[in-house]
Amino acid sequence: MNAAFDQIAEYAARSPMSRSTLRRDSGTPLVLTLLSRFGRTVREWGYTTSLYSHRLRGRHPGQLLGSPDDPAPGNATLGSAIFGGDMLFEGEQHALKEEFWIRLDSATPAFRRYAHSFHWLQDLAQVGDQIKARDAAETILGWWLPFGEDWFKEAWDAETLARRLINWLTHAPLILSADDLVYRSKVLTSFARQTRHLMRVWRDTEPGLPRVYSTAALTLCGLLLPGGASWLNRGAQELERTLKDFILPDGGPASRNTADAIRTMQLLILVRGAFQERGDDLPAWVQTTLDRIGPFVRAMRHGDGNFAQFGGVTAEGGHGTNAILAASEAKGKAIENAAHTGFQRIVAGKACLIVDAGPPPGGNYAARGHASTSAFEFSNGQERLIVSVGPASRRGPMPQLAKLARTTAAHSALVIGDRNSTRLMDDGRLGAGVAETLTIREVMEESVRLRTTHDGYLKRFGVKHERILELSSDGTRLKGSDRLFGPKLRKLSGQQVLLRFHLHPQVKALKAPDGRITLETRSGKTWIFDADGGNAEIEDSLYLSRPDRPEASKQIVVTLSKEGAQRGSGEGTNQPICNWVLSEMNI
Image (cartoon, rainbow, N blue to C red; front, side, top):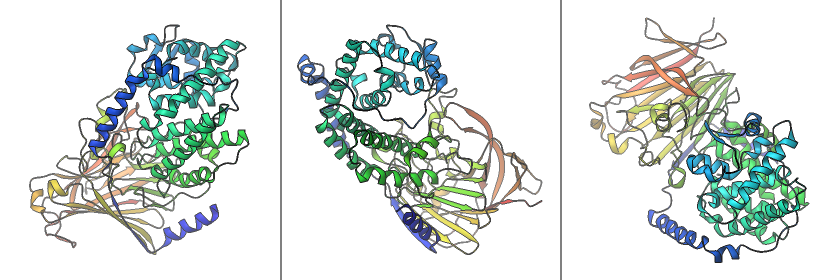
């Protein structure tokens, strides 16, 4: 079956022309969202009562029926820090004492979610002394049990609860190896109480990856806790339905964040492992979904294994990506035309071009999206040349980067009037802007050409942006053309139009007297950038291979001439246009 998928993908990539139009999802209506939040608030009041605590009682499980292996390795350094008496998370540090959970009020919400999700068990599982790791895990969990026995919002939030149950199940050897039967009974009883609550609140998670977590947790508990048939039936049914909505036909997530696809694979691997441990028949949709996601994840990687930084994914993609891909057993080559998600990939010679050719995510997925439509990244072998700035952490050395890194200017894209192609709202969500994109992919004898168009600047400036990228078959020449057209070109009057090409930190840039820019890579290869229709300069930039690690870099900024070139066809006249080329110099 995988071979057949490869043949279909190869045929689609070689067909002379493909055309796709994507429209941004408007999301859930505001009224429904407000009603849902009101209903959740009312229910949460009921969870605090003694009557609800009584309703969580039931059969006490005597043991777990299995513990699937987590394919993603943890961080042994962070696990060792726990031995030293500290829990670390994204630069935040808190001492581990008996009153640790009570004193968490002083921590940030992100740290509290991390601690209550017990994700740190993954790190303890990597340290060399597993006897010491079990003692630490059981001690910290022993402090938590009386603290988290009954519902309180932060620890029993549906997504945090789901993540905690998954971590308890996958790292059960760390928390259930004690000879203390009373302790073991308390842990197993808590397992059952929390799962009964999850059965009621899994819908409270946001659509997308949080919903995948809640339904996967319910499925795992149904498989691995005695008497969990009803949890399994509901969990598996809703997990399948969630995946149909979240994972698009090309294997990419509706959030357009590759890291979400990787985490979904991790959860499906755990579900598959639990079915296998139980000896039950694995539902066909589990492996089928893994087989769809694998080629998409591979498509978003450059030759050096790092990811194109679109949609909020870091260059590293998330801890354990290689291990997760290997464990998924998902075959299939990297997809080249991800027409449903809106990404394009061209590989020629040693060169790799990855383009964001779709609208940003809408609705519930917009909180982490980037205004990066029509941006691209370009690499040659193990070396990246044109990049994006990359997502930044609010808890990093430069907190202001968290918002700036999501702007259009932080990507290798066209910017009008220092505005984003899609607005960034004060609450962090993406607002109005790109509503529709058109992508035309042509395979020619000596090159592959992409033509992308978006309407992100149409309402504000009366124009659409068209970008043409053409990569030669040997990968040594990338030609580009950027054009603005539309019914109201006069609205562009007085607005500055810039093209930004962010360079990887290991690329050295130098402007020659003739106006061309020379790029030298670490291996000594030389590339020449030349622009016709604008003035190219070298400016400072930043690059984040990790959200908390900004590095100084450079960018090429092309200021389009106001006169523009009087060429091309389409709506209106006086079309500002810039042709540019990036070519490898043969020495």
